[in-house]
Amino acid sequence: MRSMLSGWARSNTVHVLFAFLAMGGWAVFANSAHPMPQPLISGLLQGALSAGLTLFLKSVIDGLSKRFHGPARFWAPPLIACLGSASLLMSLHALGGTPEILKTVAVPLLVSTTYAWTYAYSISRKRGEP
Image 1: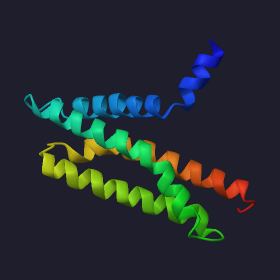
Image 2: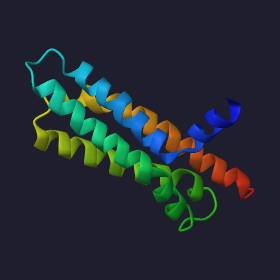
Image 3: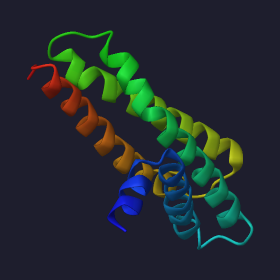
Image 4: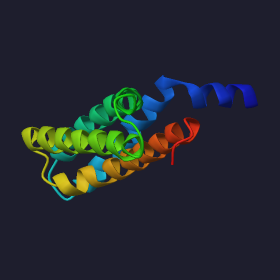
């Protein structure tokens, strides 16, 4: 049982599916005051975006952390990744007609930003940087 749970925890598929369901569900909730099908469309859009961002965020931070040195290696990659994520989310939700854009992207950005900073910190610690 423990081995099975450990395998799921390392699975990209599980992480992507969880991001789709959790953040897509949040978007449906955030837009629930508006008539259907807009909450559902917003949820599907956010779910797809969160799945994609989950898949690529680690790779982006890995790549960017190789381009910076010293303290900038800690703060620049997550900042760039988060600004890129925010821009992408806001733009695509505006194009998709999401009524509550700020409410819709607040939780996904909080989660991805927390992950990005934590991951960048762990990279810096492994390399013996502050």
